[in-house]
Image (cartoon, rainbow, N blue to C red):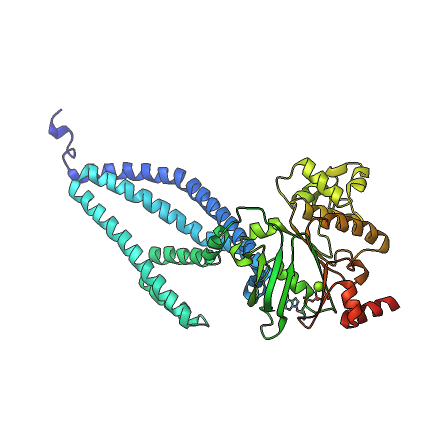
Length: 451
Ligand SMILES: Nc1ncnc2c1ncn2[C@@H]1O[C@H](COP(=O)(O)OP(=O)(O)OP(=O)(O)O)[C@@H](O)[C@H]1O
Ligand SMILES: [Mg+2]
């Protein structure tokens, strides 16, 4: 057929137009199908990862972190529940710009290279320049923002600068950079030194279990001008026992808080065997030192689940052995579903003494070298107290133990007793030595005898 039968066949404009329409509609259809699920998948994955990272970061923060108003438990839970969502709301929309933009670049390059080599080459240069400028602006923004945050405590100036700088940029620059800063802010709570600390010296041997405190002074971060402990020293040899006694507010639980490493002392040093606490990972410390507090906290789940919170991979035998030491086997076996009985929220309600014995089994299942008992029997009635005391005696056998008790008749057998008042150790010695001294400890025993 001659050229006259196709009058427009040689018109390059029409050919290009046809290719453009075809390519554009294929591309649009492709984007419609592919882009949303990719964006959704990426968005959900990022959000979940963010949540896990934040939770992980929060769990490894020292207790002092939660004493600050901006990172109180309430503020942290808001951060955990809302911030990833807010960040994703921002990023989600932008993700589609990024994904679409990426596909568009690839499509444009393929098409222009196929049709016209010089145009394709220009496209590559355009893309490289775009990416270069994006990185450059982001670095400029980051540097300026950091400097201002250091100087500007109110944050007002930074906000203005962010507005000014981002106002200079095109819409997509601005949005992408805002999103990336929000993500950075969020991940800012993850302290890189924390990971490092976690990797620090892991004891390659099982601890002997001796504990030493050297000239410890400490003030709670919320009350920096009031020292809760002043120049406190103690030494508990492997398998020996130390009792901390004294009036309310004296500083006994504060020592426990430092031994659990909820806080670090401001001055002085704590050591497990001869290793300073600061050189041990939290995991290392927790696997060697167990705490039984005043109020047992049981979680929703079976009895064995609750005990395994002390050691995740504990075998059935280990769980049973911990229960035997905690004087809990009999009452558990009497329950219709035994170790599978549900306790905690909505579970079977157990007596105070039974709950405390499960808490003791949880503390013992990891076979710790050191056990700390902070008023472990003070919330119990006389009958329960007796059974729990039997449990505590058998559980501290062969372990280094630190006991805190208001009722002095429960600690008379301890190797050493420290009387603490106003954050200071005022007296120390065995029960008979302190009685013979006729000092503060003696006065306290006399007062208790009268009731
Ligand atoms: N989280 C905290 N933030 C600020 N101050 C605290 C905190 N916990 C305790 N304190 C203060 O530290 C001091 C020592 O308290 P601590 O709980 O160690 O006393 P305690 O000897 O265990 O008393 P109790 O016999 O009543 O349990 C008290 O003055 C107390 O008010
Ligand atoms: Mg206390």
